[in-house]
Length: 398
Image (cartoon, rainbow, N blue to C red; front, top):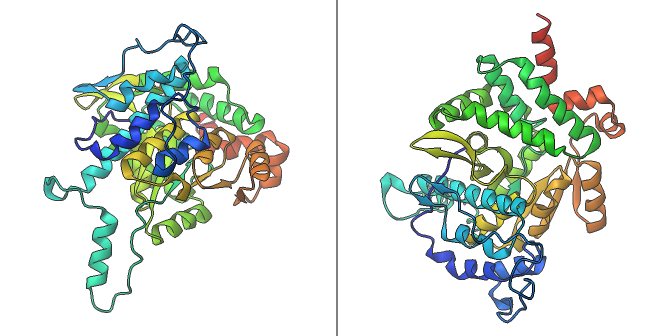
């Protein structure tokens, strides 16, 4: 969960970013078209949504709030303008979470695309394509599709169960904390899978515990441990069907991104292990390579994911109409609604209903779908935990 600074060359997206100053609904599909199609720019004379005195009609004027910053400065020029949307405090935190996630993702991509520390960005797909074409006897590689991408949720979409519970199991096995501590998170996940609704108190408690755990630890340690835990607990939990879909986009020359509330360090490890472009994940503040115990904004969740996808699309020159998004949860409807093609993977009941109404494709790779649908507590508990509950119970009985 790393804070990254604004990449040095953001000028290419300034024209598109300026459109975000319009007081339109942040997730209005028409605004998404404006971000990627220059023919339908929003009207500069559009009426302001503010009250008659220029203040937020809800009374939440956030322009004066301090912006979270890295050790060397503010997150980005775009972040400094987020307040112009007159969002509620919660919406602003999600905006900041999405912006921070996009910065971390872009910085990681830039790091990989600068050979030998040079100043010229090289798209890995272009470089690989050229190498393959030049080699005699090798099949011609499909040219990179530079304006299309696929965005995958992680938990229960790509990974069976909760990646955070798998991560917690690995940490408990290394004596970072006890298996008893895992049970609280497992129960919160089980309630969510049974009811389809997240409890804000459960989310807040889980967030605070996670932040207290990483406070004072190095970012390098989390990356190292995350790589080990992926190999031990997550690698064999990948849904083959979803992995095949990701590979389909890769074969088409498209970028493939993970979008998850999981810490960005762990999310990036999953992406790297699967050969994907990168990951948008929750970013925790760090100074000089050490976590402070605070998030940048909030967990990357719901609206935050949509903010992150939009922000990354601006940086990468993606046409959202040509992009695809995959998720299992109705909480990701904002992200799914941003793109031209939305696919529900192993959907919860609410997302299945939305998909039916909107004509979205549905794919279900679960073998115990009937048990999950009728809400058998034990089945859902174990499914939500991905085996975490069983492992914890077994450990406690020793």
